[in-house]
Amino acid sequence: MDLGIAGRTALVCASTGGLGEATARALAAEGARVVVSGRRGERARAIADELPGAVGVEVDLTAPGGAERLLAEAQDALGPIDVLVLNGPGPRPASASEIDPEATAEAVQNLLLVHQKLVGGVLPGMRERRWGRILAIASSGVEAPIPNLALSNIGRSALAAYLKSLSIDVADEGVTANLLLPGRIATDRLSSLDSATAERERLPVEEVRARGEAAIPAKRYGQPAEFGATAAFLCSAHASYITGTAIRCDGGLVPTL
Image 1 (cartoon, rainbow, N blue to C red):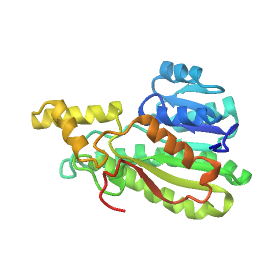
Image 2 (cartoon, helix red, strand yellow):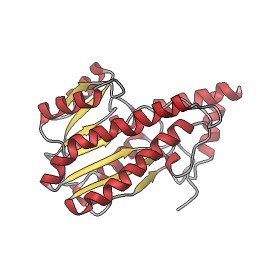
Image 3 (cartoon, one colour):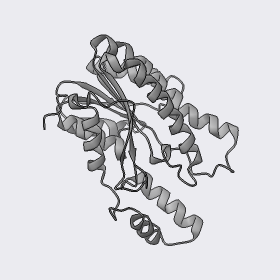
Image 4 (tube, one colour):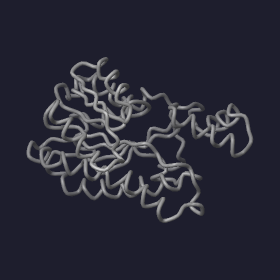
């Protein structure tokens, strides 16, 4: 299927690894010109060198002015942004009873307010051109809070509420806003979470992974490329009537419709 995004410009946040990188590669495979970004500048540039028409930008979105600098460098390099993929590192594991207001404020800052700045920087152009895709790489914790990931659950749920509200405002202007919720996808982030669980419960990490896979109806962790392909479709011309929703890519993990 031709996704109809050849020549479109996509900015993919935190795309030097994991789900962000998989999404950047999937968009580039469909002919989009991609801005690869992240704290690891050399890695961002190395990935961009492998993708036609791509550029790599080193940026820490959590630093003051990081969002503004990323937007400026991305648009200087490739022009107006047609596709914005919001992504970022998850907060540290913690239960709701362990977190304090300062940690919660930091999670909301990094998972909502920084992304709101990015949206604000690209949205006027999308509305003027009457075409745009805003997609957040979120978490299944938006629909079913994940134990010991309270900060992620809170911050990403706030982003979900913002994007749902935004989608209503721009639905008749050719701009969509959605969330893609990964389940257990085989990334470095998941490996670190499995390792943390193994250490906390004093179990071999292999046992933790086997337990995790057994809880998934598909009986395996997902692959980043599977997630990236789903993300690319949601950013495509064919997804013009999908907006204001959260779609799971989780192998059936969350036991609700």
